[in-house]
Length: 159
Image (cartoon, rainbow, N blue to C red):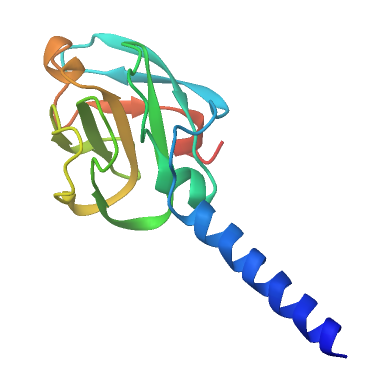
């Protein structure tokens, strides 16, 4: 009986350590499944991207952490289960990002340009949104992407 109790205690301790190790990422996550995404500006220009889709809580919590580059035609789309005021940060993110906060109709509601690498300052949408799109820092200025422009992607349209 004593050995059973010891085995149970060791098992619980090891299980707890495994959970603790996965709670805080220590490196970039593997490339996630991708989807095509387009942004149509008010001026009629359309820009095409291929974005990764973090769907599990751990994938969303890890996001772009530890990644040393974001392709100009890539990024990561976080689709929220319900609309919310999205709050992001740049903890463990070594490169600047443009964060686009997207309403349920696909309209860009807010943009945070060239976020500060490694910052733990909260970056907020300030309004309820259905998704957050992270792109390479400076891309929204380069392509003249603005609040009010339209994001088109299957995951935003229930697809």
